[in-house]
Image (tube, rainbow, N blue to C red; front, side, top):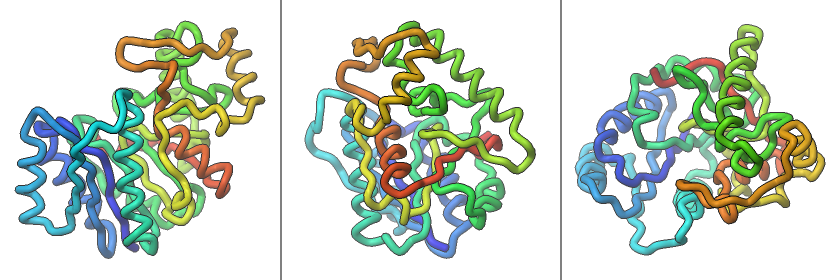
Length: 269
């Protein structure tokens, strides 16, 4: 089994050494692995650390972005992730797995690669993310019935963030031993994918209502007692942005029947 380990990197200097060490431990689970990163302009020593690491580990390939792609953060991140996936398509499409992960504080904790290992030969997932402590945190990238769209696009978004965090936490806790939680989208800082199910999928940080069936939007609106709203927040512009993972996962589901799942186990402690 072979795997590509991918991700965007920007201002990750304080975490890179630890994260790359974790990447090596994950990579050791596979017959071979390749690290594919997209570096964007940083104000710290991220680029220096990448160059230093590449000298000792030639498995690292990284692209240096030299232009601004968009004024919107999610559009830029989607571009970075798509660059990584393009490299997988070009050179590593025969690798059965690829990992997309963040290279910041979320994944610089202690990794437990044995947890990931036991899922590699299971056929009940095509995209698999993991729980985090003290709770599952990536609510923006989460779509789980009946909450199929972003919490930012309904009224009372902050209270729904807390609600959804408890909602998915309770579901993960109540899973029978060995089971995975089914959803429409989940990332949580780290996810592993079966390459064949996502080669024709792309990340998109724009709002992609065309990828979510209207009946699911209607149900989400009903349970939140809110119409869909498009509002600018302090850190995200909900008029133009959505989490880039949602479009990627929805394409996997509707194009290829991909099974998106969450493990209740914690990979990074």
